[in-house]
Image (tube, rainbow, N blue to C red; front, top):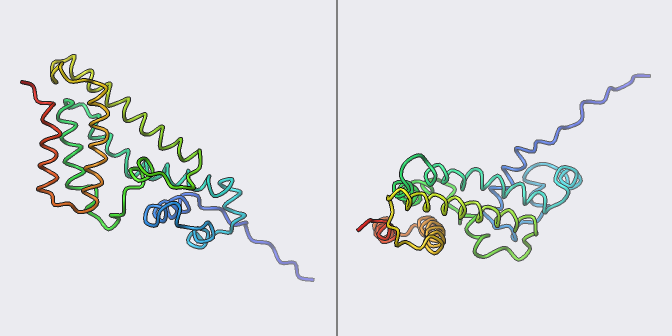
Length: 201
């Protein structure tokens, strides 16, 4: 009797699954793609996905974290570099206007969309991820603005809390408008207005 040796069990490729899920949710929206469709795209069964992520919400959370790492965290390199606060804000806004959406993946920003208009089926875990990212950016912006005022780089008349929130929302707004292909001359005019309060008299 011939004994057939079993092959090695298939290894779940989490990096590939995260990447495909991220681009799919980004393009289609997190409410608009079924788990069956995601499984088909990544070439895995539902039971495999459940074993790896604990369910659909776990997969969405993992994809969202990857999006933040690939598309949002890169902005921190501009916002929180060793340059002056004003230079950093200018560099971040310039990047949003001129570079972030100049590629084939110019779908609505998943972070902005879920931050401003959360998907109806957004899980508490995903809501927490968005909340923590907002909180992190606000915390770092406030610290950098406070430091800039103390160093005399920015006018002490600036209300720290108000202007921190203002900058955060303006960064999101410029990103959204740039994503929607608003002409760059309009965006650059808006950037000039955003930067105006940071100019010392």
